[in-house]
Length: 182
Image (cartoon, rainbow, N blue to C red; front, side, top):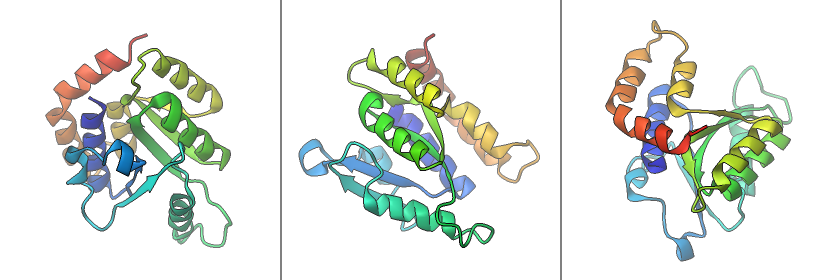
């Protein structure tokens, strides 16, 4: 289910013109990005990195985020301008946690989508999400975040995002019911 949420987020990022950065964990040994995402990530505006580090914040990705932040006209000249980053992926307690902690230590705003992260050990997820919330990450759901990003039903992107939310409502409901138990 998290890959379906990730698919929804990739589609939303394209609608909202948000850059997408993807990583694989040692693809030669553990496998490539799932095919449902690979086709969506194939255009040139998206960047994918292979890594062996548990955090996504490898030098190439750190440089890409820094370049993205400094390319904003209002932000030019600052050594590091914080960015907002939305995280989805697998192994919440390992890669997602280490990436979020690295991003937070760099001063970035981090959103971790509770319905978009998973773990091979179900008990690890809630512990990791609680820790990340205490550390300053915003732990939320994909639907909540999408409407936060749009901000207003009068937005030019509202209809497309609303349609995407309706199109994925069943998958989102299952993911929230599975992954967001209190």
